[in-house]
Length: 366
Image 1 (tube, rainbow, N blue to C red):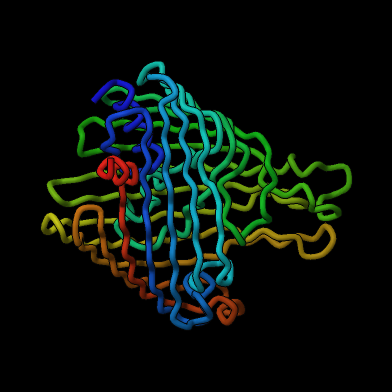
Image 2 (image 1 turned 180 degrees about the vertical axis):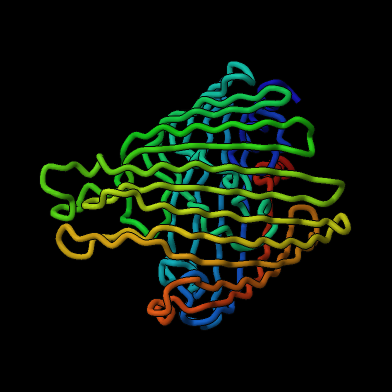
């Protein structure tokens, strides 16, 4: 494998695509997912299609081009549809990543463009082929900000420092954020291949520029900030893997003197029993602040405490083909007056994923 292709394969792997096998400057791969869901009808977290059986189809395309041996262009796009989506059976076409990567050395990799948030550790496992379960932690916010990032690795340490356009906030809990520049830092220590400890931090504005009179007179929406500190760990012994994350957040709220704080954490274990068969369990708590303007400059700001757990099995049907099934339950620990509005729930899901090397199809035809 030439140096150019080797660096491009590493770049696509870091961007979330499967390591590619092509031997030249262009790599193209994709992941096709089909899902079936049976859920309750009322859960805020797990319900899909009002409790009726729901389906979802998703296709993610990854493209990498080595413009020069140390300069790469990376793209990830997605097409998703079905009555199990949040878009009410609409077909949604998006692009999540578009970035230029410059790699002068392993100590300084520079990304410019749109990429996953560098805060937390779940981004590299968000795809169906790398997530051992079907759901994702409720405390993990899937965001793709614009920005610039510098990262690097040594034999035992890694780091990342970025300026990004969006905060890491939970959709539905706080107003949709407007773009605003904010820093994000992270790093990790890997004393042995089986163990890694990491931490990340970000701070800056998190509100919306269109809140109008909800922002007190004379104040600016950017003056109210969110600070998020996250910690992550990974440990493995043989075919057993453990992963966990813990995050603390502090929110400044208009017309309130004290911050509104939140905490979220999960623990996940995976056991591979045979080369084709594995099981996994993830348990989580997300005590996240619900922050919204009610009327004029009056705001509601209080935590909503939800617990959930998912257990699943996976079986590799063949090269690049993975089938998973899981059951997930969720329950809220809130004031009795809110229990009717936040009922417990469940979700049973089946997922079939196909990881494909698209470029190899055309090479075989030639």
